Image (cartoon, rainbow, N blue to C red; front, side, top):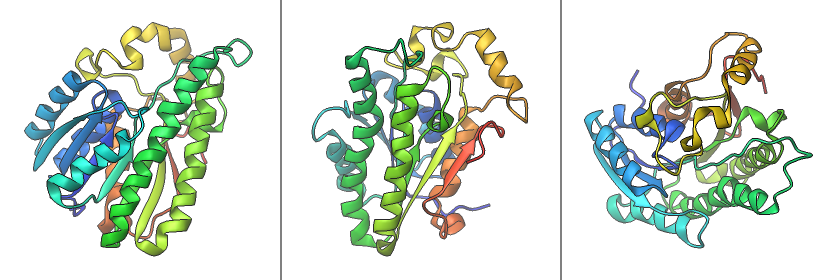
Length: 265
C-alpha cells in the first residue's frame, strides 16, 4: 500500500538507537526525507547511512541535546530550512532507569527523566506546530509506553509517558482545526536487535541485564496474549501508518499499544 510519504519531511527525535532507529528505517523505506535528531551524533550518522541504503530520499543528522533550551526549535528548523516545511514529527527521544517507586529517591534522576521524556517533546511540538499551521497539515506522533498505564519498576518513567498522552490529546483538540493530527504509540518492551542498534548514550548501553534480565523478560512474555516481544519494526510500522495523511487522515487523539496485547488502552 502506498502511504503517500514519498518525499515527506520528517523529524525523528532519539532516532539513532533501538526504537528510533527502527522508525527511521520505516520512513526511509517509504522514500521520506529525514532529519535524525540525537545526542549521539556518531550513532546518528550510522543510522543516516542505513536510511539512505533503505530508500530515504534524503537524510541528515541534527546532533542535539533536547534538554537544552532551544534545541527543539533548532531540530525542527533544520527540517524547515532544508526542505521548506515539516510534514511529520515523531517525538521518540526518551530515557528510563527502572526502579521500585519506594526506592527510586534520586531527585536528579527524576528531573532527567522528565526533561528528556516530556520537556523535549513539548519543545519540538511547539516548534513544529508553528510551521504545520502555515500549510494546514501535519502529523505529530508521541512515543509513550505501556508503562503509562502503570507497571512495576516504572513509576517515574511511566508518569512521564502518561503525561505525553495528555499532551498529545491536547494538541489534537487544539490544532485539529489547523489540519494537524496528533497520536500516541505505546510500545511494549523492545530489546535492541543487535549491538549495532544502539549507541554509547542509549539506556541499553549499560547492558541488557541491567535494564531487563532474562527472568524479567520471560515473566513479561508470559503476560502477553501473543506470547512474543515487540520489535522496533513493529513500532515503526504503526508510526509510519499513523503519520500518513492518506491512510490515517481521520485518526487523531488516539492511543495505540503495540505490545502483542499486553496493554489494551
